[in-house]
Image 1 (spheres, helix red, strand yellow):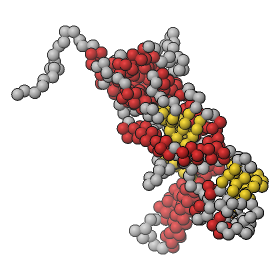
Image 2: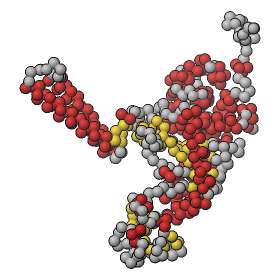
Image 3: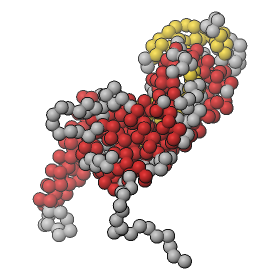
Length: 478
Ligand code: SF4
């Protein structure tokens, strides 16, 4: 039996096959093509969307956008690799009409069109919304760290600089001692010469000056750390059991219906405490709904953020983190006291009423304090407080929002449990399946553009899994 035979390389064909014949109807490149063609690139403010009358004709931004979307969909993100693909990959040839821009043109397009690419990503979200792919009732918000182009060694915090300078001083002192000894003794062949020691000392002094310069920079900027390769990136913890890496904090909101990403943001904030309000409000606006429920983890628990959500029609569900020092010491926690909003008083486990006494401002927050005169005679005092004068409770002015949220969390535990499965799926897909857990470019503006492309392609992949290419193309044409 013989093998399946291909066409001989020297065989001439009378009627050349068209590129279109190589691209089957269900090929995702047809959807990329139709989507980019449906965009108004001038409206999205792509550079060179209108060709100049004179000069060398530029590449049409739509062609370069198609190339990037195709590349990100197929794990090809570098401009040099995309240049190669344009010369050998029949799908790219079809998509670009056999245009083969050089890597610099490709890289410049991504660098110069960050905002426009973000707008194109949002246009795709609008397409998804118009196709009814968002539920618009429940979203999960989460953040994940994506590695920046900056090694740990090229990031300096104040404590690290202090340690390095101490270490350098110690080494200098040791070399100086060796130098004194070398001056007095005969030169030993196994030991560095006085000249070599002087060189080492000079090098260490130069290094110390560089550390001092960095420390000075930190003092002037008020920042807590400095990164040398990518100045916008920050050293961040990446989770239990892993070492901190110089990274960016990527925030996403994911709709519960089809796990599509509603919105995303890239920040260099080292924690998620201030992200809930802006992310939730933007998700609500993108979905075009009046009310929205939002799931988030304990890292987002911040009273001002919860209050902002509540004031803007968003109901967050965030479990309360266990921070109470009283509980840790085995004493009654605040949750053991019942607050009565009618009288603005707390009732303690011994039945005493704690009334409002005074108000103060702490860490930028308005705090109200409550006490009772009954503590001195209380039989449960040992279980309640170590303070001789009795127990003092504090309450944030916007604590009612936290209490309402705690009630929601207690009432619907199954909803809270959904968070993990909703939001970990997109991050897992982006980092592992799409291999886009690290950035290739430097600077927050550039990494934002990279993330816009990653999110656009994640959503595109997801949509292609929900509907066939032909019906998607048809939907864009209507
Ligand atoms: S110590 Fe004071 S606040 Fe605590 S249980 Fe006793 S009376 Fe109530």
